[in-house]
Each structure stands twice: as C-alpha cells, then as structure tokens.
Image 1 (cartoon, rainbow, N blue to C red):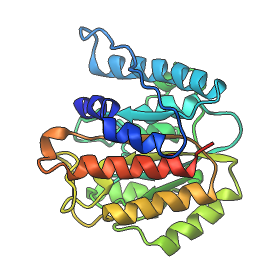
Image 2 (image 1 turned 180 degrees about the horizontal axis):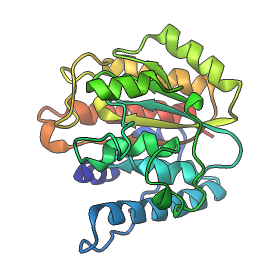
Image 3 (image 1 turned 45 degrees about the vertical axis):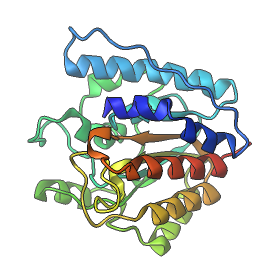
Image 4 (image 1 turned 90 degrees about the vertical axis):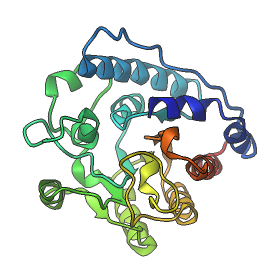
Length: 264
C-alpha cells in the first residue's frame, strides 16, 4: 500500500484534477525511516515527521492532502492541524478501532482510529507533536461493514457515529449537521477500500457492500459543502489489486471532489 501512495503522488492525471480546481499542487515525500528499527517505531517516527510537515504546510496557507499507505497517518495529519475543535469524517470499510488489549490480527494499522480517539499506545501517542485525542462523538465513520464480532461490539459501545455499508446520504447529512455544532473544522479521511470492492478493488481487504465511486464522490462533496475541511487523506491503495485501474480512477475522482470542495 505504500507503493500506492507513491503512485498517486506521481500520477499526472490526478495532479491535473487538482489544477482544474484552481490549485497549484506541489508534492513531496516524508523521509523514510531506517528499516533496522521495528515496525511500530518506524510508523510512529513517520507520523511525527508528517505532523511537522502538515503544520508547516498549514502555516504557509497550503491545503494538506496526505497520500498514505496506512491509516495511522491520520495521527500525524490531525496533529498538524489541531488548533480549535477538530472533528473527523472517516470513510472506511473497516473500523480501525482495535486497541492492543483486544486486537487479534497483530496488524498495527487497524488501531488508527482507536489511537486517534485516545485509546491504546498512550506513551507513543504522546511523542507526536501537537497530538490531542479527538472525542469519539466528534467522529463520523462512513462505509464501515467488514467487522469481526468483537470489533462490532466495540464500535457499537462507543460514541462514534457509524453510517454503515453504502452510506445513506440522509444519515450522513444529519450526522454532519450534528457535528457542525461542536467543531470548527474537520479532517477528511478516505480509505479507498471504503468503495464497494466489486466496483474498485483497492487492496486485499476490499469488501462488498460499500458505496459506488459516484456515490462516494457525492458523499465527499456533501462533507466539503457543510464543514470546513482543514486536511484530507487518501489511504490504503495497493496497485497490485487494481488490475483494471478502476481504483486509480476513483482516487482521481475523490481527489478532484476534495480539491473542488476546499478550493481557494
């Protein structure tokens, strides 16, 4: 999925989608971390570096659009914009809401949203400059559907606002209206496997039952119309599973919708 982020960064049609909306895009990569370090140490160092770069970009008046392999990048992106009350609108087929005590897969990236809301890895989270946990009630999780039993129970017991499956626009609009009363701006997180796996296969974890690309674009437009978006991200694209290029096309469409929704 890291290779997918690089492909998106260098994709000329995606760049033209941004330019078409009045932006002058520039791209850069966060410096790699020594591979002799453990996975968690590497990920968290990348998160810290990302937080600094997002903060700099924001201070320079740029809009940070993060292209990342993993959803844990959200910790760095939100840390870079945490002035005022920040909410989250997160599109994903998965909850990414495990903490270390309950996780059974050993996959660090399925803990991203849990960490973002203040659960698990406290000592590591506190090393991220600007990190402030986001209250669960200020998170909208849209498109979620591929869950283990314990993950579903954890999500249902939380204050996260879930809009499952294909994402009902009426429910999304109501959730956005409620969130707008509590936050001044939001981080828009779009995991590409939130799109229905039968239409566009983003990675090996893609699942059926999600929104079409067209509907996902409509959802993103709704978010941008109703809430000030301070930063965005596209994550979890593995080109090896995108044999027909439909996920790449979806990424371009989502990017253009974000660029249009936040254009200067």
